[in-house]
Figure 1 (cartoon, helix red, strand yellow):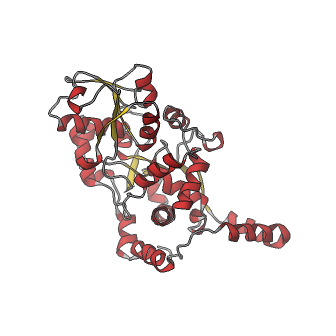
Figure 2 (tube, rainbow, N blue to C red):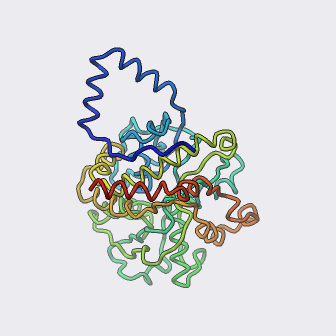
Figure 3 (cartoon, helix red, strand yellow):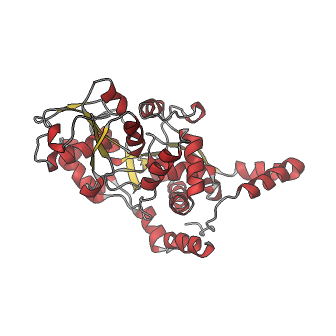
Length: 354
């Protein structure tokens, strides 16, 4: 484990000064190029566009990856960019690319569902869970005024195993209903436009979707937050074949992850800047809504064993349930940062600076 580097917010004035110095001094520029050549390359697949990705785009924007010796190329997938268009978010094209990253930042549930049901799916190991409780909202047509009115209706979701599907199943069960008999579950039916077009009657959406839905006159029917549905939500998932030979790189990335989470929680302005750059979000209301949820992410993002247990009650095929939840995870990276006191130290330094 590398010695902990000091946590700090990258100031624009400092950045501009360094940039000016590099342009004025060719020797300094060459030294910077040489330093960049020594960085460890790493490809990071961001998956869907959601509040859970905010620490990772902030890590890129604020030099956190570089400070940890990493040259990270990270992208939002084309499918994710297209899906979020229905919620009014247009991802800049330069941030969209089709890649299979050594690291995937995505839901543990969809990752494990694909891995245990699709022969060609990449096998991954969950190193961290940054979203361990469902914070989705059940969004419906305006004329649906009670949760009980959902019975017999068409419920949209993204795809099997996706966190919106998982969250909706958990909610329907809490109502005492059978998700396969008491409602009609329709894939590729998430997002406000699916209701507007008459394709579905309700879906489970994030705060990004909720902000757009309210503009369209749709109803915020149920906030799932108070239900405290545990889930193996978004987190850091490493390629299983890559991890054994690259544990130092994975450790550097996890150190950058907890640094970025701390920055997100303590510097709202930096968070807003990254959301505007990567997600194209400039509406102050939408920025506040996304940030309010993002700031609730755990400071110590251990893989969610309880969430994986819950997942195995929803997706019950043999390849999924024949394994222990622990078989899907490697918590050692977060544990090392936690037990060393490094994570707690990030917040002490931030409090002292303020």
